Length: 211
Image (tube, rainbow, N blue to C red; front, side):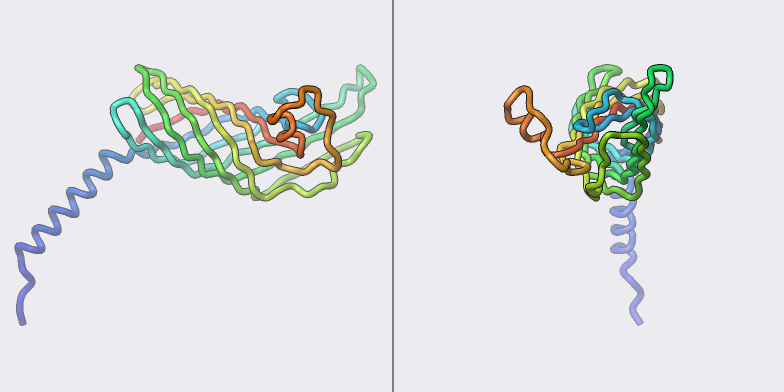
C-alpha cells in the first residue's frame, strides 16, 4: 500500500490556507440594523408616517482603495399610515405593514469618512397586515409578492467597526395595482409609469457593525 505523497498534501494544505486568508482579507462581513420611515406613492395619503424595522447581514468587497461592492440579505418593513384626527372631525384611518426579505446589491465610493452607495434591491413579500376604517373607498386588489427598489445612500465611518448609513429607497415595481389610474398633472414618462399602482417609498437610518 502506497502512502500519500507528503509533498502534494503539504502543497494543497498551503493553497487551502492561502485561499482562506485571501477570502478573509478581501470579503468583509458586516451587519446593519435600524429604522424605516415609509409611505406609499399613489395611495392619496402623504408623509413618511409608518415606522418600521430593518436589519440584515452583508459582505463587502473592495474593487480598489475607494470603490467597493456589497451584497446582503435582510429584513425590511415598508408601508403607510394615515392616523385619524378626532379634533378635526377626521375619523378615517389606514395602516399597512409590508414585511420583505430583500437582497440588496450595491456599489459604493469611499471619500475619507464618507461613503456613497447605489443599490438595486429585489425583495420578496413574506407577510403583511392591513387595517382601514371610515375610508370613502376600499383597497381590494392583491399585494404583489415581488418588489424591486433603487436605493441611494450616504454613510459615515465612526470607527474601524462602527458606522451609520442613511438610504432613500424607491420601488419601481408596484406593490399593488390601482383599480383605476389617477389624474396625471405633468404628462411625462415618469408620471405615466408611476400611474399604474402603489409604490413603496422609504427612508432608512442604519447602524453598521463591521467584523
